[in-house]
Length: 303
Image (tube, rainbow, N blue to C red; front, side, top):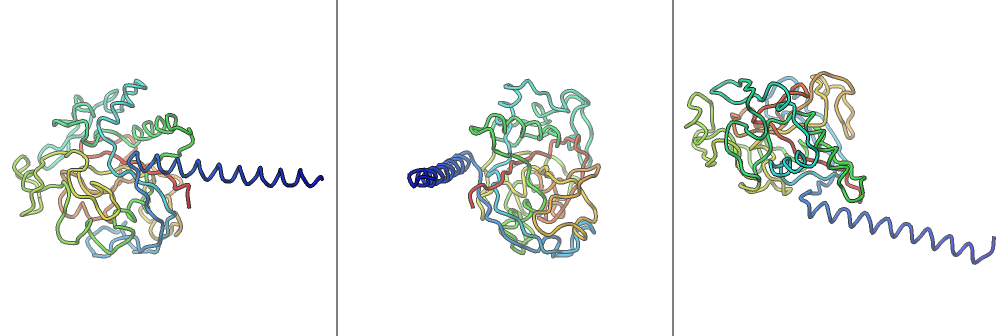
């Protein structure tokens, strides 16, 4: 092979590598500008360290996750409205039997309730609710198609990623920032005036009965807002009761089969025990409630 050809091939490959790096950096900058927070990877002890959770939160076990992006905010009503308008999509609540709403100490299904009318007034900046795991998946599919490179693998966070980020990269804490009192929108003195029979955080008043606009409270250390308040969040994983005992330790993603999906985080209607950062819920993927929404995650392409 002529020497000039060898030089040409080397220069070509150098150009390809440099161009790829430039594209990745531009993509990552776009994501940061679009409200995605970089969560650097690491290892931590996942599970209930404080003895207040159920059996499915134990044993505490070592888990490692790769770096990833997580939405700074929960997906808002305005963002979901754009999706619905562009695609004509109707949520499961709209085309079926409505949405579960908080009614006193219980939830009840209301056929007239859906994300457009969840039972209380919302701004375009409030988190969307009354959306199922299936609805969230449809939204994510739309996000993938409309991304500039059409290759951004948006998804829901895994359970291990969510807890790692919520616990500020695995710190030994029950709630964001501290261990004794909440700092976000949860069941409080304002909530009790509308729901007098509910358990609340006595002495805490966040000023909201229902959802609050994104960014109303200070963020957790990683720059995430409402990670443990405002609305519960759908997780990518299927639910496994014994997954903490037998699951993989690196980038666990839940069981490969199962009837339920995981929900994490507290909501505007949740009492103290339910907003612990290790608390787990399970619901069928078609479940919807005016306390449940979601936030986006994305693999970190730049190491």
